[in-house]
Image (cartoon, rainbow, N blue to C red; front, side, top):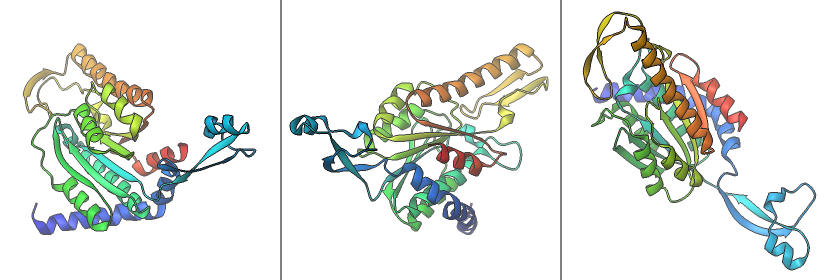
Length: 287
């Protein structure tokens, strides 16, 4: 893609996603995540209606009267966007590829954070860390992130979510709001997610195409594995082959939902054909 086309595409995405973040997401994002980054302010006497979880038992014992810890919302938060750019993200069977929707979601979240004066960082991953942009503020920084999401060519086509989460834990020492955007056609990340979720506020956004859920009966077909690049001859006419494919797909989806929920992380599912705006708004409101 030449520079002119790239800039045109970046501008198009900015206009669409900025409008969404300005009018819809900035308020919802702030409401959902404010208070997640808190600094200790003072201890005062307990008042009716205070959260009993905030009671400072040491001070209470010393004065023989209930006291609570008071926290202040930190002025700025850090958002980390972790985006899967492996081969399977290039799947698309209508007008949209998964990677197009992933880019739009990431851009919308970045502009929402900008409205809140937060820093935004980016991790692009496959089965390795393809690109890391440290958190910074500002429109030009967000435009750089969008540019990378559109243009970046991964070295690998495979996926390793555990590796990406390990990198997150190693680089982000302070608590961050983290969005992992992927189709989650990957497993074995339960342990690393559990560790990362103890420190960070993590949400997994699964972007998928419903046509991936089932294998159509087309007889003998040469199929390309998007993540390995291997071409295999598959008998899609075999019911057993189709059922096995569907089971493997369901297992990965269930693993994603259960693993994220078990770690206390949020879960959003959206297809390429439906409104991710509705899904994200509903998620923010439910928090």
